[in-house]
Amino acid sequence: MKKPLAHGSLLHGLPSPQAEEQVERLIDSPTVRIERIVSTGQASPPGSWYDQPDAEFVVLLSGAARLRVETDDVTLDLKPGDWVEIPAHVRHRVEWTQAEPPTVWLTVHRAG
Picture 1 (cartoon, helix red, strand yellow):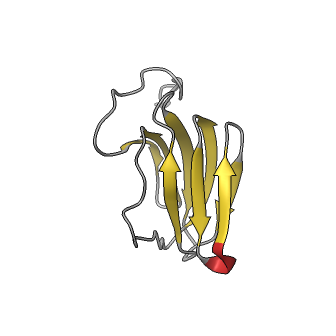
Picture 2 (cartoon, one colour):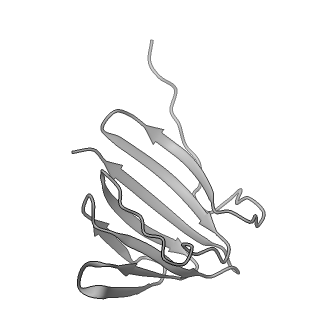
């Protein structure tokens, strides 16, 4: 039996602003995880860094954000359409996100 076609919009049906970022897993398999993340002014806690075991490809779809990468102390100001590939175990943090309109990210995590 064939699996039904899945579809949707990454920019419609956004959740209302919450204290925490809203993460929706769109695809989850042993080798890839794709998520939509909706940020409304959230940032990484002071002194906190992401250090993930998988490589991550990130596209900013709407809003704006500042991403800081510990390696060489690189800071990226992201706007819609900008993307970044973060290798596994490269420490990074979100310095700020735009609240209105919401900042919407598409992330692809790849194992290995």
